Image (cartoon, rainbow, N blue to C red; front, side):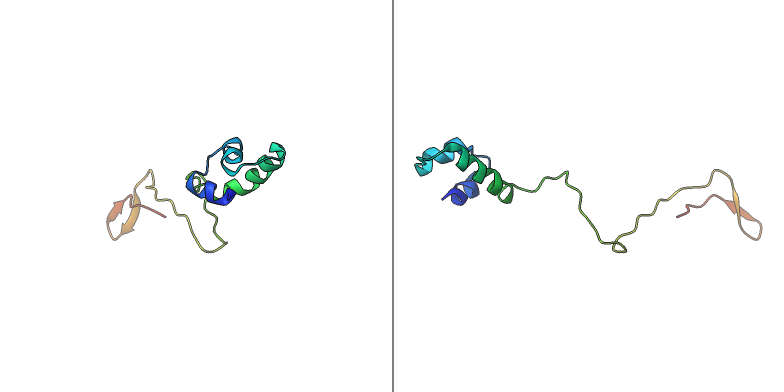
Amino acid sequence: MIRGLLVSCPTMTATAIAERIGWEHSLTVLKDRVRVLRPYFLPPDPATRTGYDPGVRVRCDLWSPPVDVPLGVGQVGSPPVL
């Protein structure tokens, strides 16, 4: 019953859940249980970083050198560099 209420409203307070299920015992016990279950029903936090295994992703930065570099016979420029 608690999980069903958390599915419909993951931010519902433990007090509101207690009223809806007719909880007659210590509210502390129910609050502890809701505290454990609630994270499974909350949507993912968009600020949470995604983890990758080593070697799966690579990061490259593009930059242009501040000076002209020789590019070939008689050619110079500052192309983007990885």
